[in-house]
Length: 135
Image 1 (cartoon, rainbow, N blue to C red):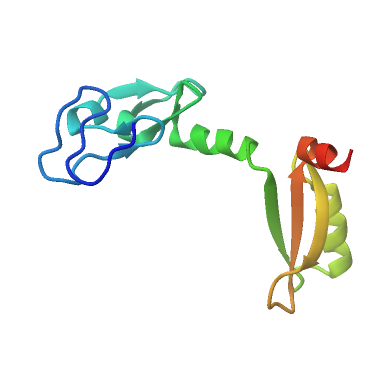
Image 2: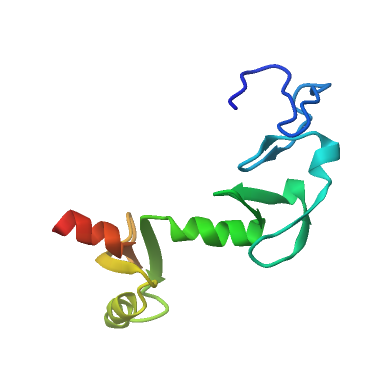
């Protein structure tokens, strides 16, 4: 539920925020009071016990922040990786960019980094998205 400026209500118990801005935000849950935020919850991916304020909800699952970030990465359409020509030659960078594509991604381009004389950027796109655009 989107709430405007002013006092918020706890998304779980409905308690009103005393001083404005005192309730922490939990991704996928909303603002929660300190009592509800300090409750221990279990990560549904790795089984770790964490406080609710250090968790997130994604597609109905409670996740620790580490697993939440892993899940979010799965949904990214584009990934850009940087390579430094001072660490390895351009030929090796091109080969590594092609052979080292993240699983489920297709290499779109390898180009010089913006305003750089030694950085290279490899751009990848989700393979399903790439195939839909190209068919």
